Amino acid sequence: MRTREVPKDRFRPLIRIGSAPARPHDAFAAVRYRDHWFTIDDHDMPSKRLFTFLRFLFTLVETGGKEGAPVVTIPAQ
Image (tube, rainbow, N blue to C red; front, side, top):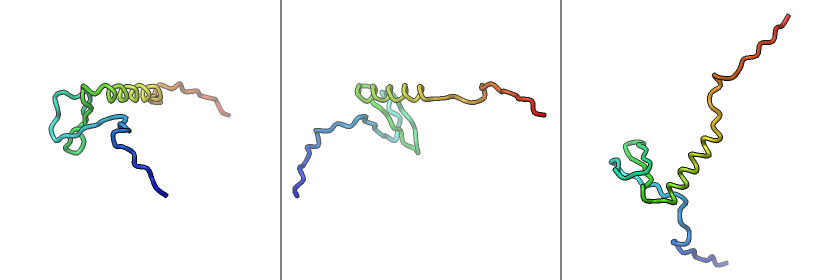
């Protein structure tokens, strides 16, 4: 059985994350992890859009802490 070769430019990655040893000055988002900076370029609109959408989803599912929950006390005899 023969497999078909798929051209490399056919599938674009959903998000492009770059890495560098120094913090870039033109990053939309930058995170330092183990002596490297992982960034999303400020001019990459599809990556910025997806990253923003994912952050929005995480805020929707965030439940917060339980420290503000009401306490119900039931007397027992």
